[in-house]
Image (cartoon, rainbow, N blue to C red; front, side, top):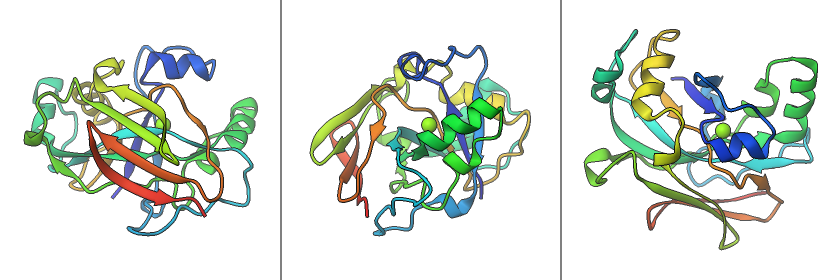
Length: 203
Ligand code: MG
């Protein structure tokens, strides 16, 4: 199983990090060891002093595919969830400055908490979904999938030009603005519409 993450997929988030708005999807991967096991806390890693939450809608692939046409992309998933793309912003900044890959900052153990997955028939329109993240009960990030630069089907078409998508692969679809640091003892809750789907603490 692999985890593919889309970067800079919301204009206001690209701007808050002073990144250019992309003309084609930017993506990177996390290994399966990045998944935070159920009921575990997120353990603040010792190599960073600036861990940021990035709440994202996550798509679960349910069919093998390569070179998927955008018009057929909807046949390759039937569940979505919500996840956090934890990022060591200080380490990422050092990597960016040196022109090095981001894996140290993005792909470490536990850096991808993800909720249970829900059948997409439960939602009216995947291109108009509200989602949010709270820290200690206070909303820090809220977004709507309608603001994605590249929607789910476009992402699948693009990524599958490079990677064969396999059953169980996850795609993190990008984060809206409002990323901010977390601290030890914080409680994180993530919602799609009004439904709390993911909850964990920082230890
Ligand atoms: Mg992200």
